[in-house]
Image 1: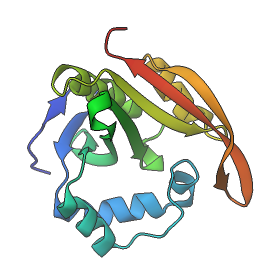
Image 2: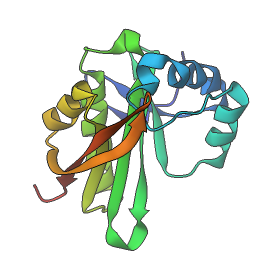
Image 3: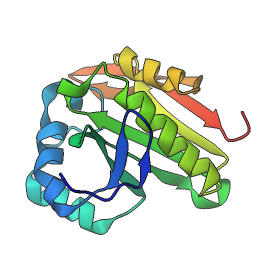
Length: 169
């Protein structure tokens, strides 16, 4: 896969998302294991993903490892004047447990602070997704709140843990 690389470390490369990534993104976001940990309940087709890619809102990057697509990471402003961005990410289950998510989170938050001048990056994690909480904690995020029964997943109300990382910490 010949791609331009936007950010890189020794574990992952983060690349601009392109329309030919739509099939990969649709497959992964529709995977029941992935969907259980992210904020979507609607099925996505390739054309949905293509439209999302073409809209280009926020900063979203394809996560690659050894030249292969493994996931997506990005952030969007919560409220631009506040200097706060919300982070989101998901990986193909075949790539879980390799440190790719942590590496991608570290790269993207560094970019948000240094290049975009955000003061704070936040992320929401379902209480039912401890692996995602560990990713954030390894990247230096701290849990700042628990929003009780905030989300509805698989027919049940679940708590949403809000994590934050500040630029000056």
